[in-house]
Image (tube, rainbow over all chains, first blue to last red):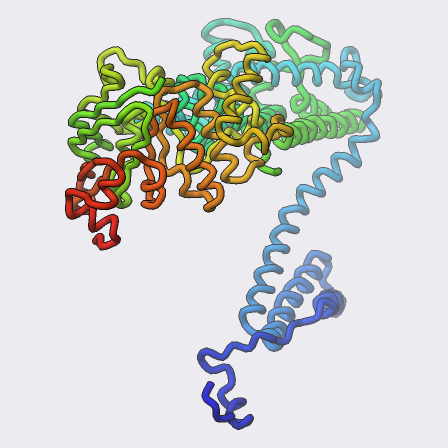
Length: 361
Length: 259
């Protein structure tokens, strides 16, 4: 600025010229958005009533579109383009979030609402032995037992295999073999569960002549579980800073001990989460169970001998009976299965939080 | 026991790229030797060849000899793990193990090597090395807290305590103060002065005042051009290097007339 004073009207006429940015700009007050939302709902309802649209979904859609348009227009006129685009993006992000949440929330709500009345101590501790499809009563004890045993067996096979593969890929693997393994793990991720089931069926039951058993199902589940464990563990091991490996090696610690005592403990929280998610994923598998475990109304505690049941298979069977009583049992079993998976996820989060390396003072 | 290091005609590669070429250098026992030179001239690479950490990098390999009290580190049948137990290292960025407490970080070298110690022995070792690293008074009341909760300077001293706890003969330091403030730097420099009675110390630094302050001998590295391998230009008593170097390039670098 020179010493001479600039006339006010000249300064105003320059407006937002280069190098002059107004620090204060008008903003929309918080209540204006709420008012817009209410107004949009009113317009949506009004249009719906006038045009005699049947579906409330259409009303909502009209209201949403009006809200998005009105917000953008109002914000653009008052706050300027950048803020208007910002509001538009925020509204879209929220809309996507809500659209994604609706099926999830309604699924959980529906299952819990229909399932919980059927869940009782009796239901959890009895099998379906001797219960006909149209009869009341019966339970899922045999199915819970089967699911737990099959998932445990699958984990016993898949977790060491997956962990060791991931350790190989991150810590040792170089060149062609590592690339081939990564490729096949990727391919395995995409295997449909029925194909894994068919593979075990042809190999274990048809060629090697073993019978239906929980173990046969567990093998198919393990095939599905291994790639998930490998992938998640790999990502977690890659997150471990190389400086920690070097610090350990520079003290004369052998590589295998470095991996066991430094790398794995540092990543253990994330690895546990990945394993638990894989468990949750296979706990809900039905197709390989139908092929390999066969299903059973009685309690069979031995996963290596004879047919068993499992929760997803139980739901499928009960649904198939088509009677009122069987429907109730199917909903109740589905609620128990969802609770089982949710508990697994909560446990995983708890372990991840507990084991996470703390940086706080 | 501090040991002497004799390097002869050492060349190091990263895959096909030659990083340092034909370096011959002697390091006296129980002394501090500083490596100075522009970025990318191979100081750190050379430092890492002295405890066989260079080969941890994929594609890293070495030609030439490094004698530690007349024993070739790259000789047949030499186990790199044993080499690293004899030649310890402190890194540029403090890197305490995040899953371990302060106590366990110091004891890490011993515990990770699977040697069983009695608790009282371990307590003594931890206290001795934390005192040695001038950290004991600051952390003695919170040995069970995570090491990552300390300040940067404290973390670096913790790493030095961790490196000395395995009782190496040589201590390599790769720009140990570059991430620290002047007060923490002073603490580390005092520590180096104290440690040199027991250890042979080699320190890489970009701070010329630091080289002048802490080292007995200084080695100047340079590279002809980007992509060319780094070479040792001259090595001499620190006083001589900083007052009257024999090579013009050294004088240019030290007086800031470089490049």
